[in-house]
Amino acid sequence: MPAEVVVQRAVTELRLPKPVPRTSPAEDFTQVVHVPTWMWVERDGWGPVSETAEVEGVRVTATAMPRKAVWQIGDGHSVVCRGPGTPWAEGFDAGASSPDCGHTYRRSSTAEPDGKFRAKVTVTWDVAWRGAGQAGTVPGMAMTAELRLAVDEVQAVVSA
Image 1 (spheres, rainbow, N blue to C red):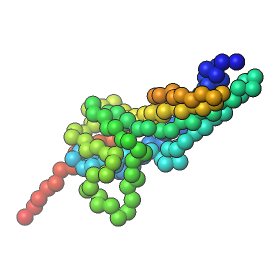
Image 2 (cartoon, rainbow, N blue to C red; image 1 turned 120 degrees about the vertical axis):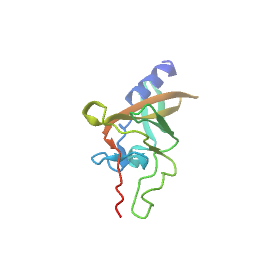
Image 3 (spheres, rainbow, N blue to C red; image 1 turned 90 degrees about the horizontal axis):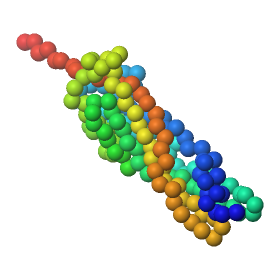
């Protein structure tokens, strides 16, 4: 039995988690033009995933590792994050940009269908396999999730 057949089976049987995207402000709240939006994917879906397949005595283990998260944020821009991103938490400056995965919208989403940008995050996985005295890689497997983000402008009124 050629190792390639067993590799294909192990890779096919990998159950990569669908990313769970999060933002701050949260998806249910309105993002604000010119105020940083923090973006991340849940960490429990960011780690190695392995599967072993065996056919006619040939055993191969495939291990997938997430490499990057690419956010298409709906306004024509994209953000490449080399990790899952940092969740915003109490204690962070509300006006500060994310240290590793964020975007600042420059226009509102009011002209979009339902008044929201259609955003998505794609996590790219690289798979390393080992078995039958051989090893190799399968690059670029991907899982995608979508979200809808309302972005609006805030106007200040100064009165004397």
